[in-house]
Length: 125
Image 1 (tube, rainbow, N blue to C red):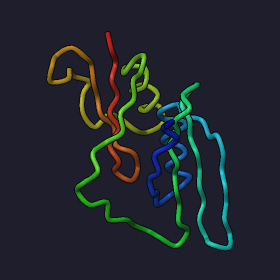
Image 2 (cartoon, rainbow, N blue to C red):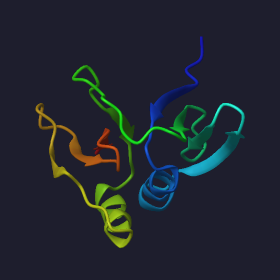
Image 3 (cartoon, one colour):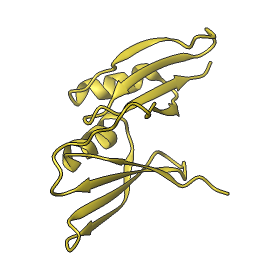
Image 4 (cartoon, helix red, strand yellow):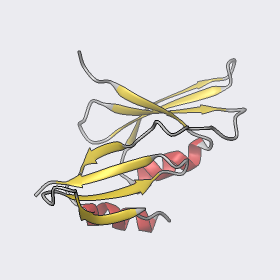
């Protein structure tokens, strides 16, 4: 079994692409516009990692109810400070941290995407 992607629904595809690509450093691997069914899929990857994020934009939906079951996506990063600088340059910032994980062994931070999805950034020493 191979992990392929995580899909999240977004309300403004261009705003989300700016956040993930310019703010966090993902790249757009593939985009599919489905006019008949009125939705767009955008697949994002980070570096050489084969697992992707699929952003689904339903053209006629302005808001989603995410519920309280979703936790967060987590990514290992080289430098939280470098990502924070890139986020700030593009009008975003961390929602928490940087700080340490509860074990005190790993540096961590959180950032929320434009739709409120939490992303954990982990910097291993």
